[in-house]
Amino acid sequence: MNTLQADFEVEELAQALEVSPSGFYAHQHKAEGARARQDQKLRPQIQTLFEDSRRTYGSPRITAALRQAGQRCGKNRVARLMRENHWRARQKRRFVPRTTQSEHDQPIAPNWLARVPAPDRPDQVWVVDITYIHTSEGWIYLAVVLDACSRKVVGWAMSVSLETSVVTEALNRAQRERRPAPGLLHHSDRGVQYASSAYRALLAKLKITPSMSRAANPYDNAMAESFMATFKTECFEQIPATHTEAKLRVFDYLETFYNPKRLHSALGYQSPVEFENQFN
Figure 1 (spheres, rainbow, N blue to C red):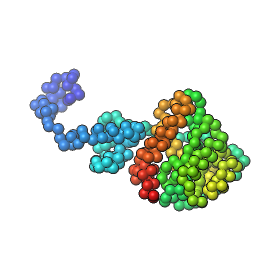
Figure 2: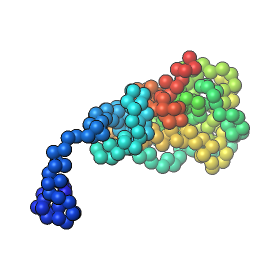
Figure 3: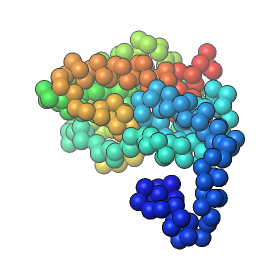
Figure 4: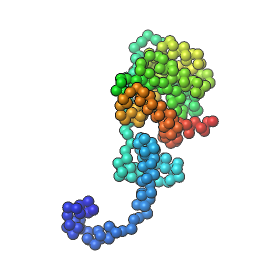
């Protein structure tokens, strides 16, 4: 009736809906209930968390963040309030890998990742990948090294070319930052950059064991593929104007949001940094 009373008389609406006009007017002046008051309290908290997440959190992560802040509430209520206020998280686009050049004559490592247990602490397994970023100046490429236990990006590098140097730089950064023990497992696709003699020599020098996906099977490197899909959805809503802008956005996303703040359901709704802190 609230919606329709601009176009119809209250008495006509009451008769059509088989309610009394006095009941409608009484409802208009009814004191706000406890549930409505709680909703009023939750809305600004949800909005703040949603904006702090760069508009990337849906109701499950918002609910987890509220509970971490000491606010107990149900996920259905959070979902309803987000719907009512049109707070919708960015939807992850399907990621189609296009940077893999596997038609080469370089040696292919076995898929050791499929044969070992899931890591139970950081620096046991690293997964790697390359993705492209479109800018108004042309393509720029990002190589990442991801810890398979904590989901933390432990090394990354960017370049305007797909030469092996971009992946070696990312791995060298990860090695300098983490200093893993010998025997760490390194999993990649069959891309020529990862199969190159220079990259294999670096892995051997660092005492890191190489592992590669099966032919034409990106699901063997699903964690890295999933990360890239999330990254491109959350970091690049608009096309950067320049390569420099793209690099600044990547740094900001990885170092000030993804690693220290972004909640992961697989980590019990902790950020990668928070998750790793329990091992220190």
